[in-house]
Length: 383
Image 1 (cartoon, rainbow, N blue to C red):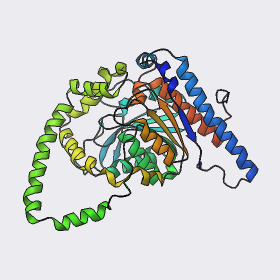
Image 2: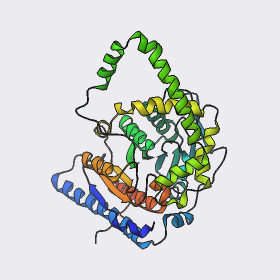
Image 3: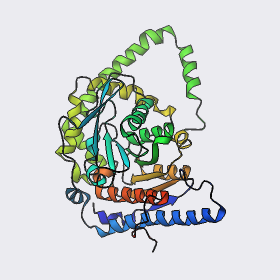
Image 4: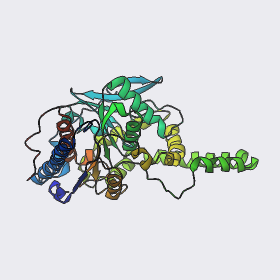
């Protein structure tokens, strides 16, 4: 896949409310601010597209030219959260950026992004509980547990308002955390995020569950449910054994990386190594049987309705799991958002790191320009 093919990528931006911007301004100043914001936003599009057009190498070749986070079998740093060991990577200095991986991945999935972003920012990449080098805790996994973990990480470790970036499951977690601790989040970046929009015609879940519980017979509670759980354990146990095989991991990755150049031993090892933990199988069972089945309680429309900061959607348009129509719908729902479409699959930050890094850095520069942190860069101009 040629990076030059990304010339077909479109950037759609619409500016709505901005955190802490525009309060108390008169009408003329508001107009000037809107012009300034439009200039910066269009500049992001121009600069990113120019960067993509200038390159004729493949994503994999471009990645080889980037500095890569060294793989450490014992991990980097650890933080104790609620008595559990949480792994994270910390590099650089400046305003903080926090990176949240997707399902089955770890902080090492940001291998080509951490060193580059750390040249200008303080970068953290954290492993969610149950994943990577964080503890495989035998707890009840639901959508709130990682939101609470990320919120506390921002509060206890980072200790400063941050831009939070998440891929897939990490995107959903990032969005959830941003709505719960808005004072600690100055911007959100979603990469092919998990999560679904609610169905307005669906019955209330809580009421539906309560009715079902009341109507459940003794036979259902004492026989049917235990048998169902036993069957699930057998099936999911086999699926976990299959899922952790290196050949299987490689096959799945190549199905969602449209340019498989970066599907290498480093990446595969970073995914399979944590599965050797004695509790990994039970964590997998709890994730698949409970979290995945019950995540619909927290829908994207509900979370976006509570979001109060700028949102960037960096979307791999060639993702076979989460296509660009989802990014378009999020953008339509949340006015204060920008969309950058990349010619990559489900993990654009690792498949096309050069494109991802350039797009993210340009957007971060626009946030700083708008906040008055530094003067506008010459590259952010409209032609």
